[in-house]
Amino acid sequence: MFAERFLQESVLLLYGLTVIIYFIDFLYHNRKANRIAFWLLAMVWLFQTIFLLTEIWQTSSIPIQTLNDGLYTYTWIIITFSLIVHRMFRLEFFMFFISVFGFFIMIIHTLRSMQITDSTQIPLVLDEMLFAHIVLALVSYGLFTISFILACLYYMQYKFLKQKKGYKWLRRFQDLEGLEKRAFQLIGLGEPLLLLSIILGVVWAYMTGAEFYWGDSKTLGSIIVFVIYAVYLYMRIQRGYQGKTILSWNIFAFLVLLINFFLFNSLSNFHM
Image (cartoon, rainbow, N blue to C red; front, top):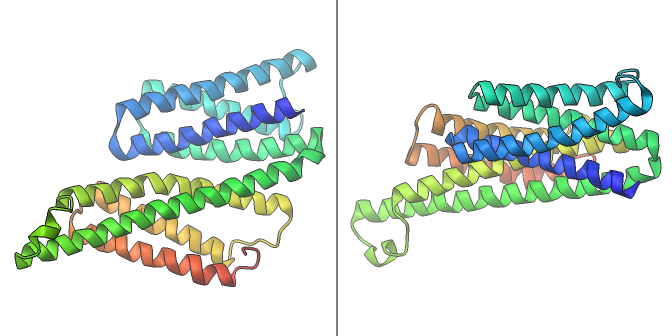
């Protein structure tokens, strides 16, 4: 049973990495990231196909009789469809969101499978899920914090250049374009981590029977933070905003993050 749980969690980890790398490909149109995401997804599909064929061999039927079996087959169809779309079209936006949806369905199926086969494993898996939820959130917040610091350094260097003073300080800074680019890259990495954290947190709350609702302050706060940084990425990529304008939004987003972390956390019903 331990080997089966380890394999299921490994597949989830691969799928989570696929979501992150597809997001990077979506942001930067990076062919290397696109290839890596494809092969990770192909590995997930291979494992899922082996599980599916094993189930068909053992039961002599396609696993669709129960809701849990249907979720598994549905996940396999999503992954198969994703691989086909990846090879035939270059739709980074589509690939990212279909991967997020497939990841969510796979988590639900994995937990329901453990409830059916060995419910004693559920508390351990939920503890691991909670740990992953917290770690991903903290890492994403850390990346957003460093991005905020780079935005502040940008404003400092801009002020020095405008006033034509502080040249000893300037030698220690990166150029303005470099600071803005690094700030953008950090947010681009932190955003998918925050999304995965939110997904894991929601599933954990429902599965543990905790007092959870979508109107909870911390839940809403986390979603708002995600949306604000998503708007930042949209403005930066699609609208072409750069320099002080986009970095002002970066600073605003970080202030909202602080409010969510310190204030909304204290008002939440189930967050400590």
